[in-house]
Every structure is written in structure tokens, then in C-alpha cells.
Image 1: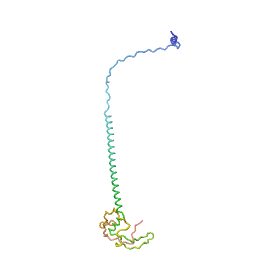
Image 2: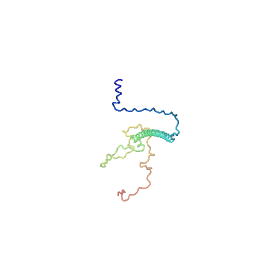
Image 3: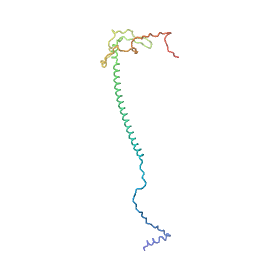
Image 4: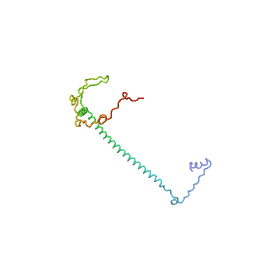
Length: 197
């Protein structure tokens, strides 16, 4: 024997006693069996869960559909209202132009003369601070009144509009223009005054 093998043979003696080696038992072979479905009934999924899931999906789809229809309807209404706003803005601008044209001094002067009003070529002024009359008061007459003021330039925009006739003009206070049939209330003990207490 070689020296290395002799050293290995003596090694258990040096360590003391030898350890027992476990004995290996060959595993038993189990017999093979065929896979057979079990006799227990398998649990089927309950139809209630499927109904709930399908109902939830249908509800979500219907909600989204209704929401999109509502939003699109609101968009159509907004578009319609914006169109009305544009149309009303145009109408307002046209009426403002008509009002400016009818409020021009030239148109007012022509209408005043058509109603029989005359202009005074010698105006008189009243100073409110001290009540002084400035100028010589003279009554205006149709013979002395100029037809048009020389400072007024004819307005081409009002040339096609006929002047107002005095036949259908309502009274300034909204009355029918007839005299009041009831006599005025006579004053007793001076001017009436409101009670302040």
C-alpha cells in the first residue's frame, strides 16, 4: 500500500471511533393509477355573478352614451345661442346706426320745420346765477326764420327718410291732445304742501 492510502486507513483510528454509515433503503414503487374524475361534483360558477358583471358593463356603457349625448346636445344649444347672440348684436348695431341717423341735427331741424316750429334768428339767454336776461327778447316769426341754418350740412343718410307729419304726433305727456274735461282743483289756503311729519 502506498503511504497516502495507509494514512487514510489509519485516520478513523486517530479520531476515535468510527461513525456508523446510514443504510439506504430503496424506495418502494407505488403502483400507477389512472386519473379518474373525482366523485365529488365540481362547483359551477354561479350565474348571479355573471349577471351582475354584465349588468355593470351595460350600465357603464349606457351612462357613457347618455353623457356623450347630453354633452353634444349642450354643444348644439351653445352654438345656437351664440348664433342668436351674433344676430342680436347685428340688429343692435343697425338700430344704433338708425338712432344716430335720426338724432342728427339736420333731421331734427327738417322735422321741426315740418311740424310748424320756427327758429329764432335773435336768441335770448338767461343767466341762472343772477337771473339776468342777455339779449333782446323778440318773438320768432316764420317770415324771419331761415329755412335751414347755414351751419347745417345736409345729411345724405336722412334724405330718403320722410319728415314727421304733425297729424299723428302724440302729446308730450302721453295724453290724447284734447283739453281736460275736469276743471282744475281750486286752491284753498295757499299752495298745497306735503305733510312732512
